[in-house]
Image (cartoon, rainbow, N blue to C red; front, side):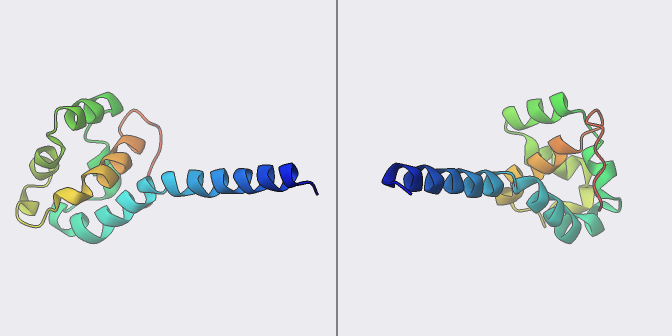
Length: 106
């Protein structure tokens, strides 16, 4: 193999690894919901995510009110929510929103 071929192969491998890591947020959000929010909410992740459409979730996140909306959907969660979960839970909610056609396993 030439140096160029080795470099191209290494770059392709790096892009594959980075792409896989970037798409893991939905799974992390689903895991967070199952472990931290499900008991406080009292319903499945499918019902939680389907409480809004993808556009509504996007608008809520864009307005900076995602944490407030999570607490509104799950009122018993008031004290147990950590704002560092926002991005992963948003990715989960967006992926499984009512108009997405996807159904989570939690």
